[in-house]
Length: 356
Image (tube, rainbow, N blue to C red; front, side, top):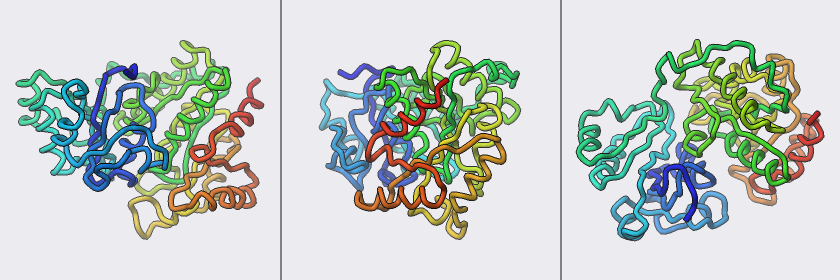
């Protein structure tokens, strides 16, 4: 049995798996230390392997059309403890059809974790079911109490290991996945690396050091980023800290990265980009700013160099990936890598050369 923080889990992602709105489920299918994922709910891909659908690589996680089918198939000896909402729709709203599935999970005695902005604790019917069946409800994006938050102090300047910010040209573009792949590649190479998560999915994946940027009160965002990075450095003595980006600097709905650059004080930046994407995700009519323009913006704001581009190969065949990387290099003068398709060894070597 897989060792995990919270045991076995089913991930709900109906009608969104293998789409941008399913990115939380995608992260949990690819990697999580918090759960042992034993299935995904999505009627579109029911009967298929989640890893095969997502990355063309089977991982043994089946997709079911609904919760009843999942539990009947898994059997009592493999019953999950948690029901995790794997949706990440625009605005973080809970679809109406998901509520019935959550109620069913609670009736069956399962804990429920949600990273959406529609907080389950405010729903009296759901909370009554949770209490009746002795179930835990966790709203991962619920704003922490102010007395638990940290204000920026400047202690980030004590952190003397290599710090990389993994930013992107858009939201839902693979920043977190690339960050994890890079951390794991460093660890495989015998070096110490830590991921600092800045979103709900990273927390759900078991990031030891994290904050949830878009649920944090603005006055404390910089302090929470600083605190997470400093704690990772103080407690783990890593060779590398990778800070997960959010949104993108020029995204009209999710302008993110400013606080990470200002408070996380990265030494360098890596930019995640999807060459086939022409408009900001979910916002037709808003053309994606050119990658060189976005790189220039990051470098002006931070005073730090973008040292590489990592590629999201959505909408591309395998044969198209390396030519796309070469085109990015020609345009920007930077090395470009698809670490999801080909691994992170080359990028790891580049970062190792920067460790003092």
